[in-house]
Length: 435
Ligand code: SF4
Ligand code: SF4
Image 1 (cartoon, helix red, strand yellow):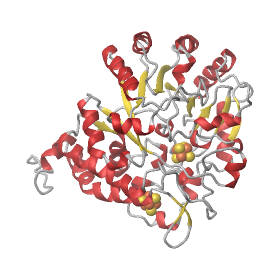
Image 2 (image 1 turned 60 degrees about the horizontal axis):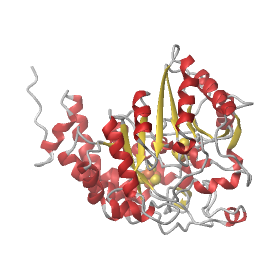
Image 3 (image 1 turned 90 degrees about the horizontal axis):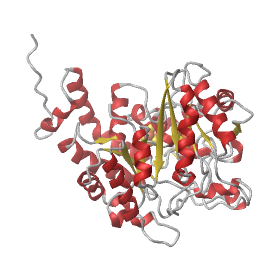
């Protein structure tokens, strides 16, 4: 399997019991929602509304130390992975991350500690990259494609595109040999240019890619009252009044077509050399393994978020007051995750699936998608259908033949890359003679 890219959805959250041997995944926001950019589709910038007007958005030593200690203690697994995200986490400064490594040091005798940093890349310098390399940080860099595509949505406060600054950061990561991958958001316009995006990544030597669909609804009355510009999570069991999406939200069928176009290119040229996480997850599901990504897992609920002030929320997509679980200074992560699971968060992903999904031929790969975006009604009128259903279904149905071929190869001890030969003709796989 390829290594994973980093974002909130990349944390396995595939079960929802109180089983103590299961790990907890935490995404930490050392600068809360603060960012040096104002990307048009960012859903996190407006989280500033949760805090007071004079908030100091910087994780204190007290919060950091309580978090590091409790996170290591709460993990039954030999490896503990810290994920640093934002907002823009590098705004916390290099000294903050030096302090992180110092705080983690005493625990390295009992656990393997790993760090992952999701960044927009614009503030990276030689000094940053030398630090990231020396301390084995895995870096996820947000880059949507070539300049004209990237700059459509990812801009700074003056309204200028950020492509050049991100590419400078990417080159520095490459120069210092830092392990990195690319997180590419697929918004409305991006979805129309799949091969421009994919070819560009290949031409830049990028080997690990994850595509993240951009979906947000226009605010409903509750959000407007709270001063928010986007709607909150879907209600799942109730019919939604507000199903209108923003004009940058990807269109469902176009998202499916985007993934199909990239897959068609990848399956002919790049199997085994370029790793597109969305394709890895699909193969994983086809083989029958639990999903390594929460959106396509059966259940979720063990992937929490810790804000700069120590407040813990049920998930990155559920940083809203009703989903606040406690604070790391006074509560334990294990206790807070238990509390979340007892409210039904996580298991709802499965129990609230409409019958339309339960009967769906690609349910095994899709699992109904993230509950936050299940705000449509199914054709027979049941609430709780994912906004991207049409695209998900089209993509998963389309790649079934390839997944079948790759699985057959793997079952027979052959590398998955042989599929590139197989697709040149009718999908026939010549197996070696059995002795
Ligand atoms: S609510 Fe969505 S993003 Fe959060 S853990 Fe569940 S599937 Fe993942
Ligand atoms: S493709 Fe659509 S119907 Fe099928 S499981 Fe996914 S969301 Fe449900």
